[in-house]
Length: 341
Image 1 (cartoon, rainbow, N blue to C red):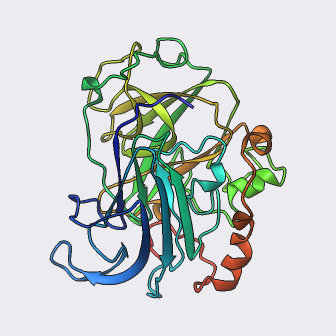
Image 2 (tube, rainbow, N blue to C red; image 1 turned 60 degrees about the vertical axis):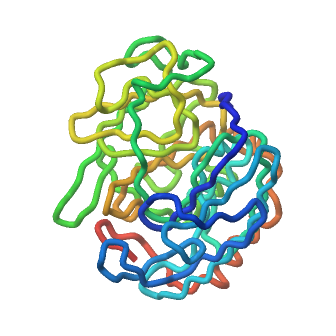
């Protein structure tokens, strides 16, 4: 994967609601974390929520380089007005060869009721874990540069990558739903990774239909994104940010999240396909939901090579499906655009 800078201290900010200022509660690197329901009033109006650690904002999990995180996460969700199963999805841990651990529900795995996380702090610089809606602090990428001075893959011109993916969004106020390239994302009944491991490689056969983008291996990829904000599985070069007309082809900053602005704003990103597997590209909008409103697509990166690329999958991964079928307290849920569960 692309090299990243190491820091002597790393913080994992956990939030199950809107991302706020860091709380004084700090745990880790060995800890127990309960996911619970609680009524709080973050904006003055009492409402049911899902909280990590029972606090808002959630705790900071801190560790030093060389530490190993061992975190027992237990799902205690009981409110039937919301989904009661959950997953843990990472930003900033690139999961090269470990796509099965990336965590987005129905993309790489089913939801679960509990997991023990074991993470060595030797190859990551910083990351955010989340299971619900959160806003991202914005930076001006024009002022940021990658410290190694590496150039992005592809030719130094707009459209100069092997694969160019234009991404446009539409919003429908009547039912508060979105489309990405004329398709509203809905969760498949079988995780995309399991579809690929079972031998389905054609993007027209992979589900959810219309939301899967197949990428060839060892290729430069350019994303031309109009509007909203996004997080992804690769560290990507920010060639042009939404609020600028400057294209940086020399030493653009490496990010794993970026703000993509409003209608008419163009953000240009580049990355190289060296990490086979299905990867979730998803958007977040303040005060709105996420995938229940269709704001996502999946890149199926070199699906034919996924089984060979990923490391041996640990046995607990294969226990997720029967446990989900046995213990999931909610009925089978097919998301309806504009509605929350």
